Image 1 (tube, rainbow, N blue to C red):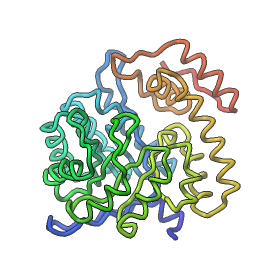
Image 2 (tube, helix red, strand yellow):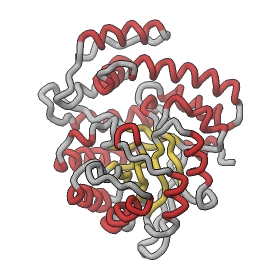
Image 3 (cartoon, helix red, strand yellow):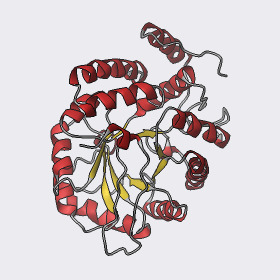
Image 4 (cartoon, rainbow, N blue to C red):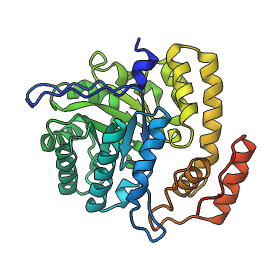
Length: 328
């Protein structure tokens, strides 16, 4: 079993320049899907990113996911996504964090452009949503799509982003990983954002545990650890990094009673935030209330409701947190 210390350490990705052999990807543990900072006029606020990276590094969070769902990647132009990626590349050179870039959710030529851009910056890995209009309906169709993405960035580990609640693509990940085998030399695993742990367990064991599975469900960390999972991409790390680390430590070490109690605490805090219909707005408000990082408003057309702010302050206070009301 991997030690907790090794899970928290940033381990360099080792890759072969020969695209005929499988790339090696050794990062395990926690990755935080960072929020994209915007100014009140809707423009990017890139100056926040170095402070954001440092905040996470000081909290011992060694993995960063940029331009994902929580990062509002699909609400930005290709040029903006590149600027955000470049800012995080610069910031993580100082903090030495593992950097994963989400490149999907755009027209196919843009996905290819973003893949090439990420590889040119030597990021540690790329994550890709499926085609969202001409949706793949079989594992083979999905493999064909990812093959083209992999060819655009052949020397960067590639992961598939499985989030059926948003994509409505319900290809079984266990079957998909059994079929993909070595068809894409750069392919190394998936982000599994689902509450179907039976499917997640099949994905984990596919091809003799060949692929890394990052669970993207904040409410199921303890249960996933009991199934043998050791890697997670969790929204709540942004606001509750210490709690997330403690929960993972307990789960990995097998202290399931402690893990259950910590999971209840973590889940209660997350639910207080994501229960709002204006989910993205509430997440950004919570980040400013609970940390020194002001990520600003969500990208238009989303807006922040005063009612959401008032409810969040009350709920977080009732849970024992001290919301910071000093941010603009």
